[in-house]
Length: 237
Image (cartoon, rainbow, N blue to C red; front, top):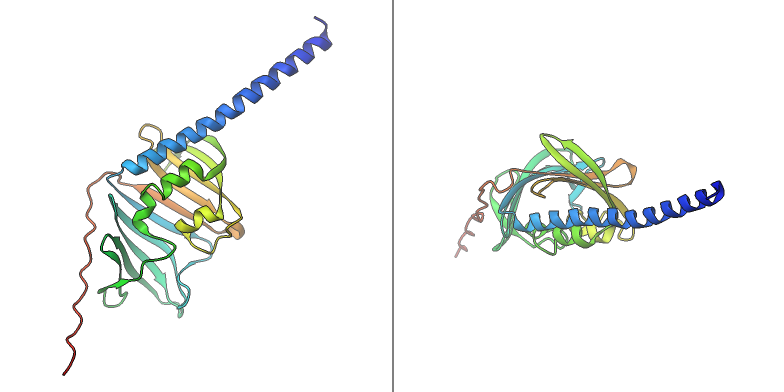
């Protein structure tokens, strides 16, 4: 075989290898994401933090209340409690607790710490993030152009890093309406290699903004009780 024919043959072989390997790599990444989805559905409990990067996000846009961090606890199948650090319109930093349980959504007064029942949030419902329509569905069908980045150390964990892109409309139920429904946002996911448990998720927004979710203490027993709401005062006669 002359050099020209050999070069053509080599190029053709490389093309076949590339076409064959590329889909397998994508399937491998999606297989890993499917494994994380299964792990989320099997969780008995977890603790997680939500950190807002860049400009603060609105917790109550009407009253100008923003937040940057939340410390949360999940108890399967349908209980979540989050301690949220908020900043009022005047700049005062306070903390409130929001609880999602089967009996409804409750929120504490930042000053008195007493709970009241509040209307269900039309965008974000804490416990539903761990159910099939929540993060598991996003992991199975929401990421495009997903690929394996490789092994990385995340805190004290040895993890596998997977990247992809997600349409804003798929992220709005988890993050909020500040996202553009038709925009593609880069998403990173870090998972434990042995268990498939998610350890970290990061969403990148334009202008240096983003969201970081860290999960830990998975399947460590926790309780999320239904808050006690003070009885309404009896009407005066």
